[in-house]
Figure (tube, rainbow over the protein chains, first blue to last red):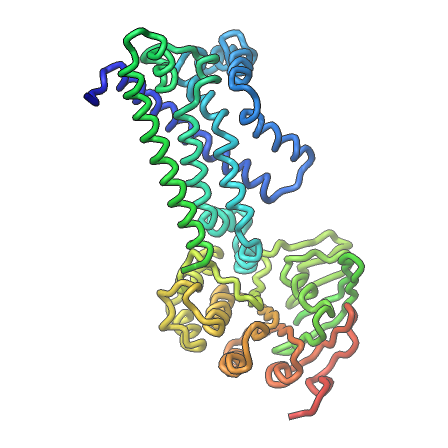
Length: 231
Length: 224
């Protein structure tokens, strides 16, 4: 009964690829942003903080439309990237990854920021007195101690990216094999008269992926506590 | 030689301290809140003076008129904190090795053995800090600071968080350290008895000002 058709497999694999690329590209950026928000005071910090959280509160269609205006073929950034580097986002799976990356960014940054804030600054000072330059302090003390939070952020971001729908479909549409992810495939299937069984199969797959992500994130959080207590 | 002549405002508290010490162990003595920790944080480079000069062995580390401020990681000044501050994600061996790695120094097995023997921590090497007692933690922190090859060692009430029995356990190590390692030390304490055993020179601090400077005789209380 639970036999996935090639179209369904294509959607699942595409979703995994989109979410993986989005998470891997967003993570280094997310660590940098989280560190800035946790450890530095700068002008416009609250505006930057709000801008990062915007995709969480804006209607996803709005984010998708803004992406289309900016990164579309005729968008300012989109046209420039296409002319100079041959990078095209519009109606490509890369565009889906971009949309998913932006939509999941706040969820990725938050646990990383909290875990960096939880790192005892006195340990960073101690590292300094032992001869570690600021970047070495970050790599050898701050980041390792915040690592479980980084992993939790990646898991959450990944789960959000897998399920992203509104911004993706607005920006890159719903093209099977190119931009049709699990979510947009389900959306198409439930609008087709005999698509219920296929939709249900994809629903089960989504639930499994989401549950796995939550369990993994819990596990990382528990590791974080152990790590900070040095056992 | 350590030369300190600094002024620093911290809220409604201010420090204006000036002293020069040639002693092997300079005892910084004063009640809590006298500004002892702020003063050695300035020597370590963790706190920047508003005005003044700090120099170790003739090298200027801070000079506000010349806008000199050597950052903490380039000062080669070891620091043993009251709360040890061992890295919880590293075991004792890695904690001890941290300074050497950060400074890009070659491995020195003989020095490592000397320090671990001096402090009796050879049997703790594979443990995580979370599995150490307070006294053991402080000994490892001492070893970690020594192995980073500092030219000056700051100790901020290293016995402050230990009970009397543990203090008696650590004090002999500090005496040995003073007599065997050739690193000058600044030892902060509010305990006159402790300083009488360890220090060679005393700087008395009261409300951010140096009130007395001299040998251990200047300490209050009965002599030994």
